[in-house]
Length: 224
Image (cartoon, rainbow, N blue to C red; front, side, top):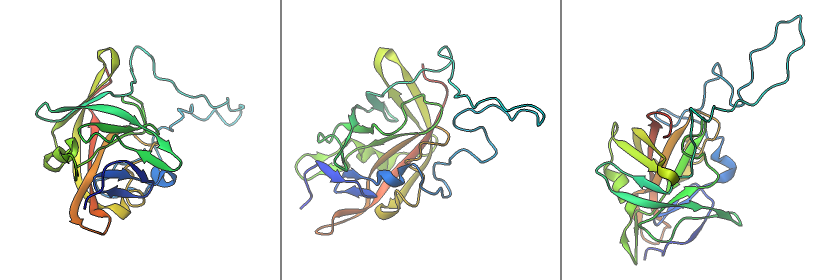
């Protein structure tokens, strides 16, 4: 019997339509082909450090780069809009005692509050939702199973802010490899949107689905 949605342990993967991930590995998962890629070693640092000073001068202290407010808006998303116009409310998904509480309403989506906000200059904006429930039927994120590369996902927030993303990959990943075998939860590289739900084969009596569907998308432009 499939479990009712609720609090879940922080392990890699989803169990019966509920997200479970390892926060300790979230920001350091190794990248693989088609995964969310962190910034390259030769690219600008996350902290926005200035270039090294000439060798005959003392190096200035490192400075934290802050995007100009006129050029970048960041926001906590309160709605996700999938291709075709289907939309769902987004709620912060907070960790409590080592567990991540995804919204119990299967028509709602959880934004991991340890991840980037929409419009942040680096880090993945991570959302998870139920694919189904034994008591409430199909979840909103069952739609992830039919998404395709090149389609558009939009995040909306307060005051009319919104940011569109282009899907770059749709993959099915074994749940025990989600945190350790991908960079889905990376918070140091270039910004991406990562949507996660259950997938693969459902094994009754063995903890639910054996895989996750992971949709990765890149922002089309600065948030407005």
